[in-house]
Image (cartoon, rainbow, N blue to C red; front, side):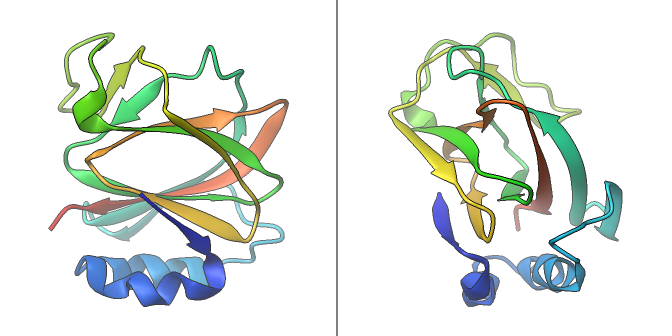
Length: 149
């Protein structure tokens, strides 16, 4: 997991050959008033969703993992809470891995909880169990999916 300020996002471009296109997309957005929807950036290599998501209490939020995609998550309208745990520490799966949706959920509890403020981002890799959308009300957020190279 990486947490940093959006002004430093370009410093992570070398982490994956597809990161450059994701960074270009983020730079093209009006982060004060982004258009909601799904966006194809580079076919199945890079795509994004900008949505208004309902926030949950920590006890309801489920940890999730992905095999084939890296997430860049950016809260836009207000702070969003997250939970985190290393994938190797996850034990209580709620169902088998869903290959079609590239996701698996777990009932374990995170070992780290944090709030991500607008203007910052988090990158979650396949080894990161993460529980997004923690808080009250709703948040407008950007989730960019980047194919693991």
